Length: 482
Ligand code: SF4
Image (cartoon, rainbow, N blue to C red):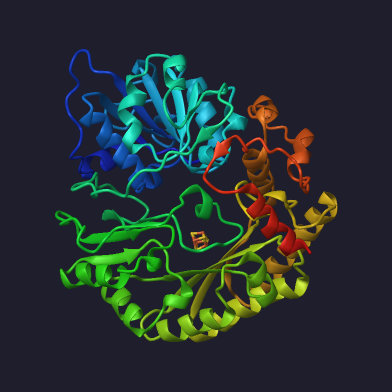
């Protein structure tokens, strides 16, 4: 979980090549806001949500610097190596549960005494395991609330703000924002997509995949319109981001628009059933090198169970169509689903091998299912079996099988470390008791959060109103399990 720190010459290089249109000089009296991303710089700089917050802080006449875990251990800023202690407020963005460990380390090592507020998808799922570490949590899309939050002087003042949870509130309604006009300009740095302009073309998703939190956390789906596209300058590449970008009704036109203007363009992901000749040609013209698809499973009965609606036929069609222009495909799968057998796991290897025969190179990534809150899978046991020990043993056997068979077939496979997924499940489903063991990292007493949850269970995250009806999720769950 420890990430490699960047060397000072690497940090200097990143600073030198970064274009930052937002920053202003600090003036006496300005509130100092630390924007902390407890993960790698490449990820943080590619996150459009963080860029929006950063620009909003300056808009409201406050001052902001950014902190990344791999830059000075997250305790001195990227811009000026300013110590975290010198700031009045720290806004943490928590994208993944495993970021919790790094966030806590930053708070401790940085000896931060100001107001500590966390937001981001992991917090929107369930902030309870972090209650001992932060003054407040923000549940929702924060851009329209930045001013109120940075003006607050105490936990008590934060408590009255819509979307804020300080531990006292019985219910918190998620705050939704409009997908308004896009930032006309952005910080351009060396991120996960390279140097590019990141264009958000959608929030939420029209699909109902049963394992995915996007359907509830970011509802309703909102799309950028074709007449609301910023003019991009100073970069060669545009990345179109959304949870499922190809579902934007104007996706192809958007892609075409930037390709025709001579930009390299790629979407953050592609649904296999949207791949056709036109899309393949545009992606190729846009400079995409590898097609990434997420079938999740290769079996029809499990496809029905997860409701992703991508069949092996869709994957093979996409492989055939794209083989004319691409020679590499990356596939994402999950294991540990209920009713999953060794035949289903064998199906993953078979499908990957067929794709390899069509395109030449295939890379697969297989992750155990984390049964997440706010989804119909929130009652499921980790590993897919009622008996946790049996479920874990079975998962280990499946992983061994995948390692062996992909090796034999020379398929490049990224196979998981189960422990990380066990911890992720505990952190996403845990309550305040998890807070007490976060630093000790001794999760043995917390196995109750891994097991099958009772139908009438009141969950730690039930206090969040994301706008869905829990009974509807339960009906879906009972349908799957009957
Ligand atoms: S997995 Fe993808 S397609 Fe399915 S609901 Fe989530 S974002 Fe949408």
